[in-house]
Image (tube, rainbow, N blue to C red; front, side, top):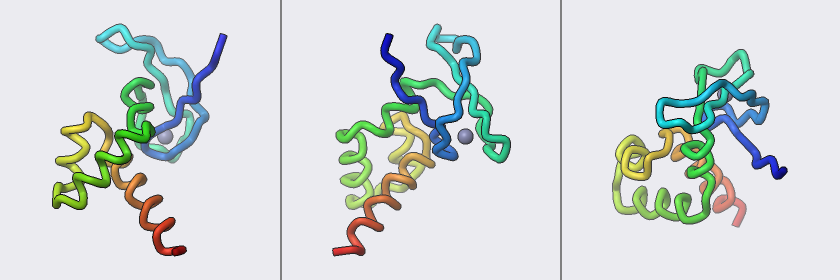
Length: 96
Ligand SMILES: [Zn+2]
């Protein structure tokens, strides 16, 4: 059995527990970080934000003038994921 990492899209914590199922029948998870605003998350939704092609689309859309909320809605990811992706990108660029 392979355990894929589950990471909270809001706080980045991997302290995640199973929390029943969503209405679509997907496993639902719960973030255990007490400071985190997010109560539950679904892994497929969460994980998608970390795929390279999604990151690439985030960057392209942002360069084309799309807003963060707009990008998040179109790509079906959380706005926080968009912001985090852009933060990581800008910090790596500044070191050049
Ligand atoms: Zn969290």
